[in-house]
Image 1 (cartoon, rainbow, N blue to C red):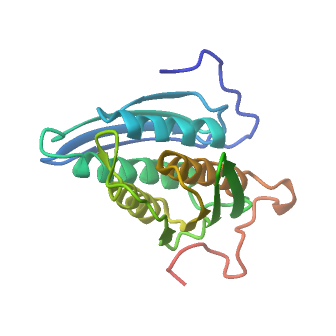
Image 2 (image 1 turned 135 degrees about the horizontal axis):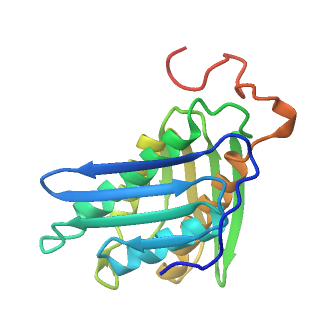
Length: 212
């Protein structure tokens, strides 16, 4: 599914990237535009994962196209995890040296009875804190434990320090959807170009990552 609007990138720097990831278990292609308007075209073969990636695109305003095929006749693990790696790698590639970005983002996302807190540092130092108390093993045909695998793979390849915590909630669908929407809102803040930075790296080290 995709929207019909056209993206407009008003920044001088084109922050777009494409990534292809191919293993014996999966084949995934991702293309994105960080300065889009939330257009998406997602097909992973896993309906619930498609729904979450659509939320990620729409609420971050990142234009996102994902195509994935994998060994889903076994289970959804490899396709879920590898899609996280591929989307994260594309984001990191599009960010380049991360010059001029705001770097940080945070969000409180309510969804009916659920409230989720998400905080993000686009530091190029991957770390995940994930506290999502699911009460059922599956959502549709998807194992709920696989969402943590997606987030872990995503932050690893995107170079993000991400904290995701469901503060309270009852409906498991609401819990995970609010996590993806929270991630999207944080990304929207963190990757935005800050006009006051004048193209500087947002760190006193002069570089983002583990090299210093």
